[in-house]
Length: 315
Image (cartoon, rainbow, N blue to C red):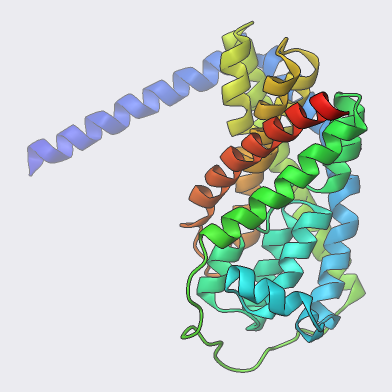
């Protein structure tokens, strides 16, 4: 017993020493790189994240409070048949496709708290409703970074198709998974919605700054290893990865679109931590989320490469 305690104590001491040295070393030798990464993250938040997310945080609260997508004549029934999820789940899917991450996860969490969908449905829905939005894909990546409206449209179509494919692939029989109780609609308050949206936006931007700094350190550590960076950056932060692939990585166009497709399909750990932030306190598990996003990244990359080759040949 004593030997075990001493062994654990030695491991903690070693871990403490390593972490302390890493922190001091980063502060002393890499402070400039960290500052550059945070600066890039601030610009990304100011130019892209805040304008793209904040208005839709407000709108999503309004939609969840007052709209009943399940009452629509055709779309909810088609959604239920394709994905095996209650018709109410069409709202997070549409919000995620049209407004972008992490609003699909937020809408799913809100619906689950309101009792509109079951736990099983919510935990699977977050795996394919949390997607890169058209504003970022077409205006930000396609036109802004790649100088091509066509590339942006290809990326968006690939994201939608890969999300639908993942939702159908992970479909399960929902007939015995009934919703318990009545749907509880919370009273909408504009003041509370603005305050809540502001707090959530700050949380999202904090994750963006963190992963922007980490991505900058990774680029500094790997130097000019283009292929390795093209593989690793999409796992970390989608904006930094897409910028690198468009401006710095000297890759053939189809290969560049393949890696970019994986980046926007998988969405990166930065987006996933933002999603976990919106899931906190809901009681929902992310056990299905990460495998589903990884599969979506691979499928989105394949769709992007295929459509790019077809577009290059016929247009």
